[in-house]
Length: 75
Image 1 (cartoon, rainbow, N blue to C red):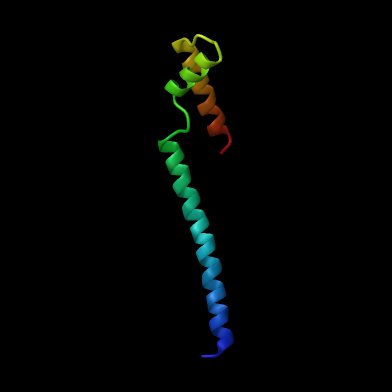
Image 2: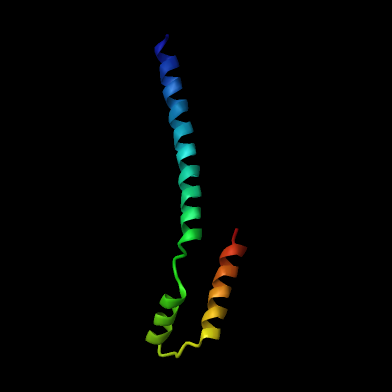
């Protein structure tokens, strides 16, 4: 087989691997963030206490629902 054919095959396989790897990593991270959200109610409560606010359960639920709604509307 000619050398230029091998070079062409290597380039095509490299591009296909990069594209496939990108989409596989993207899908993995989407699933990871869906299963393990970056912030939870306990962290939100601690942040509010540090800011000098007394968090009520109702306020925490409102903030969590707003964050979930905002993240789902971006898709």
